[in-house]
Length: 386
Ligand code: APR
Ligand code: PHB
Image 1: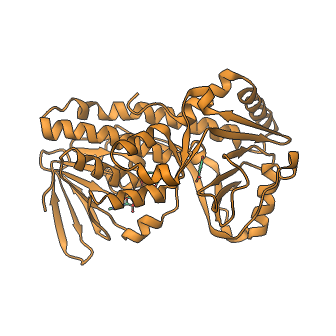
Image 2: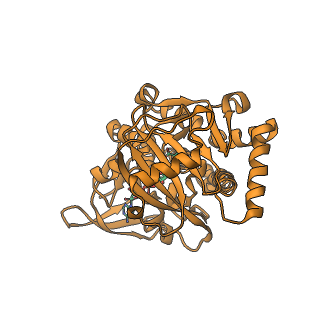
Image 3: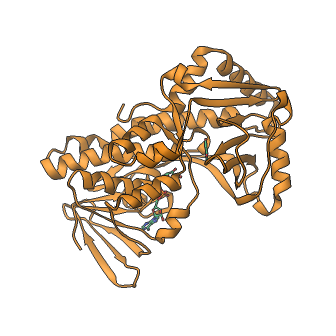
């Protein structure tokens, strides 16, 4: 098999890159280890920055987003006895959109612009330092295949082979001392916009997927077994932490349809290029979900990468390809810092001194225009390619 760009991974990064390259007249082939149904059903992120929405709209992927997504002006920050709304449009001139990653994936698959080989195995990258890199794998029938390309794009997430193939590299990692217990519930959200809550018991987040599906999270210790959290225990703790009963606000429980525990960690691998191998999305970086940045970083990476590869492979101009890693890492580190800042401000450690620092910072952010604008600018996100 031969193509111009071999893309490893059919998550948001890989599929969007294939779509953008197709629009730029560059051939690409995507290989994916999981089944199409598995990838489509993976429940992950749910917030799109305005710049992500604008990018998706600009390449024909905005129709269902605009029709079924929900534009939010901001978020609520909650502390015991206090709830404050931060209006990002007033503060930073930008909104955010609630639109599940599964919906973005559905739109990308629906675009039909990517040749994807699902359920491949034994993927290996070869000669990434040469002008003729290639990927070997076994296809879904078990047949050995060799995909020759001019460039390989590693969009295979945090556990794929591309990260190792991009070595030697610098690797920055932070593992947080807590996890999130996340639920999906068939119940109308009890709030119009997301509530991020600080509570002595731990952090809680009320998000949503639609008018009838709520998405909520609780800070729990690492290693928590979801089986130790029956639905009524979850709803009771969410009610406590989110301020149920304060100012007449009620949290409405409902049937839980999905329950999972996800650890909180952050890493960045630099540079995001090695020879003819380019990394994008979770293959290059992971952020804790507190800042809702993972999906948006993947979109920003492949927007820059697609422009670089079209310039190189269509016009022979390598300037954007040569600066891709530095260009992408500016946003990666900005978002990594913001995700760290939101995470350490909102998650309790049991240390009373830390708790007072967190409350002081939350009171500053919710009463000072300067503090609120800082959060708004980062949460709503900078323009792509800043
Ligand atoms: N060969 C082929 N595909 C692979 C391999 C492999 N060896 N290893 C992993 N993959 C696939 C995974 O099955 C997954 O579908 O690569 C894809 C990576 O997709 P994501 O993990 O979604 O990462 P990315 O596309 O960068 O999206 C990042 O979306 O998934 C969220 O939390 C993530 O919000 C972040 C954003
Ligand atoms: C979600 O809806 O899944 C979500 C929203 C905001 C976050 C994290 C997750 O910060």
